[in-house]
Image (tube, rainbow, N blue to C red):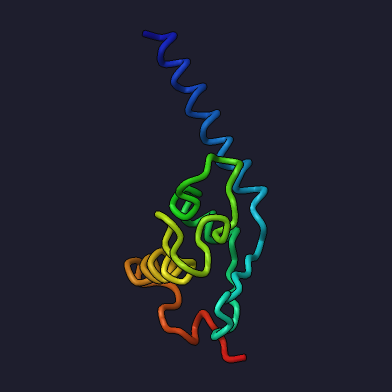
Length: 115
């Protein structure tokens, strides 16, 4: 039983450390361009979001830890196969999280400042 507890502790430390290492490699800021070019690009503090959310899979839901791709890798301008469009994905995930948490911008011009 003692060996199992020790092994479990080692695994938990390894998992936690991997998440911290991945988060440490995350870019400070990210900019997501409006592919339809009707609104300005959205720039946000990626590192702060990662530190607050603590689980990269909340946003990078299809990727393995350490192999996260940019949103546009799956979410194109238009719906393709199973992936929703970039606009719909960002509005559902980002705006939805801001609304649920009652923190962060939820109005168009708050994310997309006037050009």
